[in-house]
Length: 243
Picture 1 (cartoon, rainbow, N blue to C red):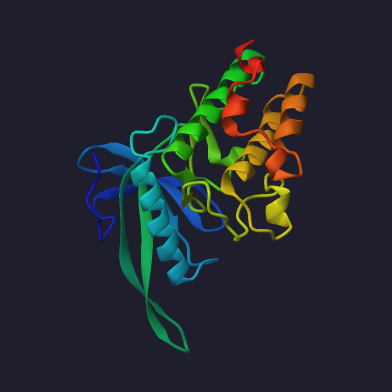
Picture 2: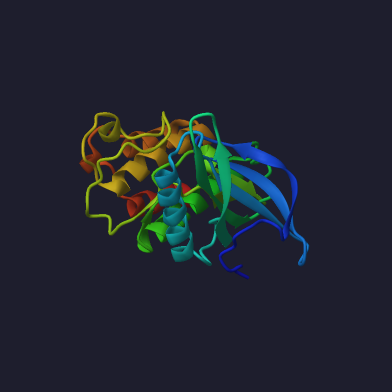
């Protein structure tokens, strides 16, 4: 069920805050009529301008609509905005408050005591990224805070920095979270998006599993030269994931 674009949150009951980040806060709400529990992502003007909020809002709607039905990706349920008035001693202005209604992921810790489970979790994340790339989307902020765990399966969230791409055009903007950011982005170079995702996935691999096999694979994925990194399909085909 996808709610139509909304102009208020009157149909929802606030439950609690789930967290906040640079550009948004996420709260838990209940849809009163259906009793459905949802996550409400509200874009914040604390660190973003109104135009940046609108751009992020449009970007996430576009991307999550493209990824609708995609396994292991948080699903968009609805969206909208409402206006409020901000009054100060210098001026009065009208603000648009943008929000996204997302499926609620009841996240749990990953069972890292089992290398088999952890390896399967990471392998599923690789397959999820492969599918996203096939659908013409790049995440651009891959890190473990944006990968929730549900029944030991990864659920990818937060596409605020994402982009629609064919993978061939270069980007110039700095996006990502250190230390997951590829060196070519840090150096201010223009960059192809897919190799930067492989780099970030290499960092994630070392965080999840730190042994000789994972170090060897991650070293290939995190090479300084993006053209020497394996592509995602090569990583997926590595025999270690089948052992």
